[in-house]
Length: 123
Length: 112
Image 1 (cartoon, rainbow over the protein chains, first blue to last red):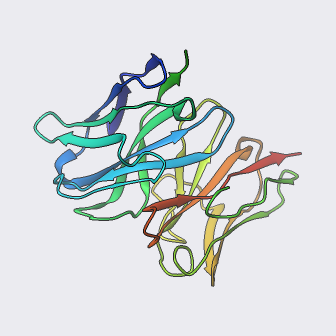
Image 2 (image 1 turned 90 degrees about the vertical axis):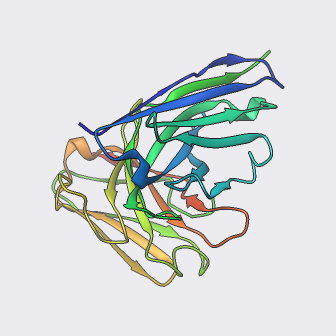
């Protein structure tokens, strides 16, 4: 079945780095744009980043621009989020999400979500 | 402060209908038909309920419907059931130079 499984979360000190992974299965990963969305404890959803199906375009929320890098390996059906210079306010559950529209360069809707991976930034 | 404005909470009795609003600007909700709605139960990942303003994914009950007028989108749930109790988020594409996708702050639906 169509599935996204995140991994790589954990506890990291302020200023540290972490790389999240999202393994996709059950669909043609290389045909869809992918997103990272986060949710701080007790808070709402916040879009973090998007990468086009072929990796040629990337967009970031202002809050993470210059610190986070989204990437993908279509040969491994895997999405990544490299997070550097982490801050306390980056503490959240991080979800990877598939865009609904095939070959899209933009956003349509998040039709498949992973279960999320928790990132805690604390000293 | 979220880019899209939703009521913090709504409530209704079983069998009733409720509507959740989502207000944005001409740069997001009003300018594009890429408005979607998500249901999230506690401790779970969000689930797509409505996409492109008014379309339901396969498997989503037809008790859920979406619409848009100007800069405001709406989610209506008819025939409320206990399992509808959850948080609901709207989302939209945005042409803002600082963002690509915006969410509403979320609405807690309580089924009385």
